[in-house]
Image 1 (spheres, rainbow, N blue to C red):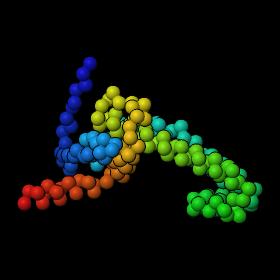
Image 2: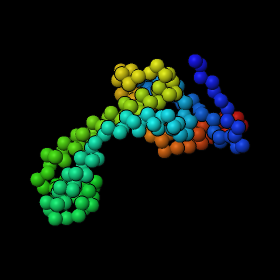
Image 3: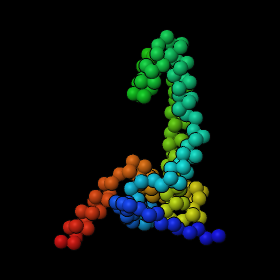
Image 4: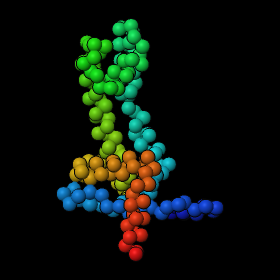
Length: 173
């Protein structure tokens, strides 16, 4: 059954229409994709479900708790040292291998998140036939550009819209 697009009876319409943006380079290939200024509910849900299986923060907290107990300090002090990247701190001595393992896990998760975020935008904004395995065949620069767009959209950045408006205003004069 075909999906019917229903128009909402806006009292005040959304301020901005989506703009087409070109992502990529001549080496990676270039694509047109919509910039909306936000992530849709479906896009947010997609990335949240993909991120739900990440356990690295829990593992890091459990290690921080164990270090705090063994060293007789507050867990927040351990987390501050870890967060600041002070891995040579006396407080963290003897835990280098475990910290290194967690950093590797976090790096792997961040790489996976990039691929999922790129896939999410391509699926919802380009083609519903797109899959994560299709994203794995893309040039890394294009995946990075899609991830940057995803981050901007998640932050509800309006910078590109303002730049676009400036270009329209200067070319129209």
